[in-house]
Structure formats: structure tokens, C-alpha cells
Image (cartoon, rainbow, N blue to C red; front, side, top):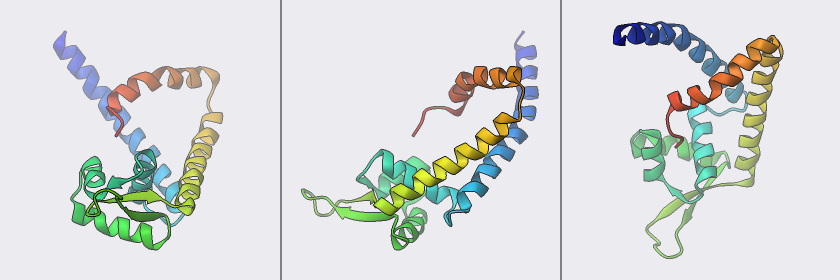
Length: 147
């Protein structure tokens, strides 16, 4: 039984991987229409979820080094999407916050990505939509915990 489960998992992985990659690629293209990379958009979404997040904490959440992250943050700050804010209690601590321009940007990115996906879903048959709806829970488990 373990072997058949392993075989099924491998077959599913081989079928699912290219589909997920194509969808992710298209969502990246939709994001890049706004002049930011997918990584930068992700950073903005993380800062929105945790205002005051430090550069170090943001780097840990993304699994990259603080120096590698610094360039992305610098560009987002220069573009007016983020600001660095000194902590009132510990002046050595600098947190990141979205600007109103950054808030508008992530709202636009989310709307554009959702619209793209909704347009594709409209092309499917009702039973195909129900199958995707039924797969959302397992796919969320597969993706792991949200950062």
C-alpha cells in the first residue's frame, strides 16, 4: 500500500508541478505590470500584515539574508511604497511600514491577480469549478502555514 501511495503522489506531483508553475508565472506577469517584482510585492504584503516588521524579521520570513533584502527594501522605499520608522522606545530598532501609495499598489496587485484568475475560472465547466473548489483545502495544507 505504501508503494501505491508513493506512486500516486509522484504521479500527482508530476502533473501538478507544471500547472502550478504556469499559474505562478502568469500571476508574476500580472504583478510586474505595476513595475515591481513578485518578491517586492510579497514584501509589501508581509509588511502590511505586520506593520513595524524589522528588516531582519522580514528577511527571516522570506528565507533570505538581510543584505539581499536590503536592496529590495531600498527600491520600495525610493518608489514611495515603504518607509522606515524608528521605534519610539528603542531608537536602534527600525521597522517598516507601508505608505498610502504602497497600500494602493498592493490593493491593485491583488485586484489584478484575482481578475486574471477569475477570467480563467469563468472558462471552466461547473463540475470543473466544483473540483477546484474541493481541492482548495488540500492545496492549502500542501502549501503549508502562511507567513
